[in-house]
Length: 157
Image (cartoon, rainbow, N blue to C red; front, side):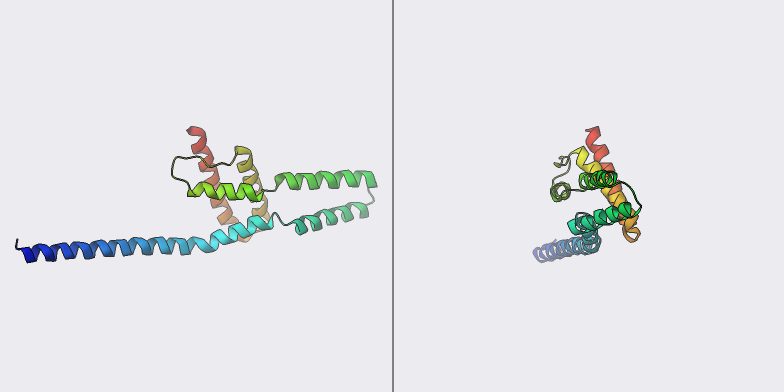
């Protein structure tokens, strides 16, 4: 093979490599574009579950409904306190959400800093959101299944 043929062959390989890298970057770009919308919807849905004004409206509506039903005030107050406490305990903290998503950014085979208890809360909250937002239930199911698979893997290690 002559020197010129070798150079042409090398140039073809370099062009082939460039095309391959372009294809990889395009695939990555397409993937990021495809998850941007669903991920934003999921984060928005999760964050709406933490909306204090919405919780306040729910508690006020419950109080009004119980009072209008003729229940004793002490019983109503106790039920509303219990409801409020349960809602706060079942809410996901922004820190837990942040830690959860940071887990996806770490190298494979490392553990992310979210306790099993926080993951359980995340799953419970997602289940509640799924009931109130059926239009995103498929996406929420995917996230729940991912969390469960990650939890199973963590327990196996």
